[in-house]
Image (cartoon, rainbow, N blue to C red; front, side, top):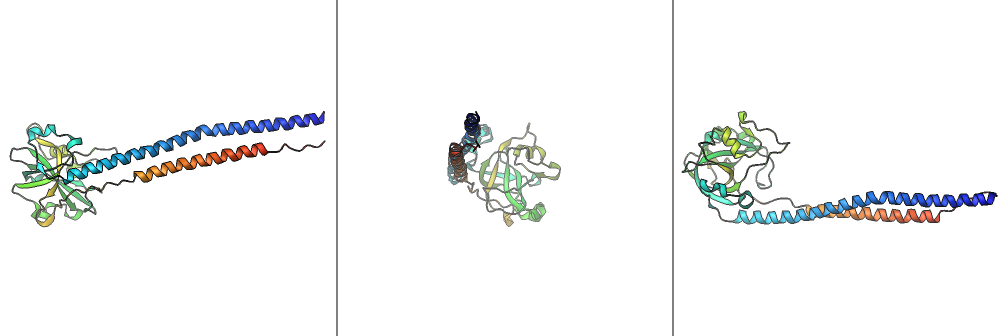
Length: 276
């Protein structure tokens, strides 16, 4: 009676361990599979981003290398499209309204690697012969030269032929500081908002919905500092993709080894010894 009882207990123990091992394996399989799928999806997304970034860089490089074209008349501005026309080079003649310049905080920019240190972009409305107004990013001034009196040589009064690049307004994000028009300090490159704050009336003044990054001419004294835009966008997507795919491979290997070894240990486990 005791021997049969001991044998039954051993068999029950082995069965219980097998059931426990099966439950443990199945319980971890689904979460591991979900994590594996997420890692593969992230890697694939980075590959797609890499293709998108390379196409963007090629497109911008081509546009910035194209000779400047005459800026369309104000009556045709509505036909311009951001996707199709941003970063196209243009030229036109206008007169700067220096008394209405705005200072936009100069954050780090991938397109102007020649600019460094704290400072501002000088956004100045310029009026064309037909009366229309285009806001111009005339270029960079360091923090110590924000006062126009400190760079009076660059306050050009006569009409000048401007060569530059079409740009559309910045998108405002939740972390973007509020513009401070009362102190002439801006954190977004928004020509419409700048023009309104500077007294241009949308009912009577025709203000371009875009602004122009000035390349030339360089003003007397060198400030504000215009410059050519350079396509220097970071492209680390392949590195990120390899990282995500690598983590997926490591997860699969670790889970496979764990499943194999834990199953082997269960199969090889000996029943407990009993006396009698």
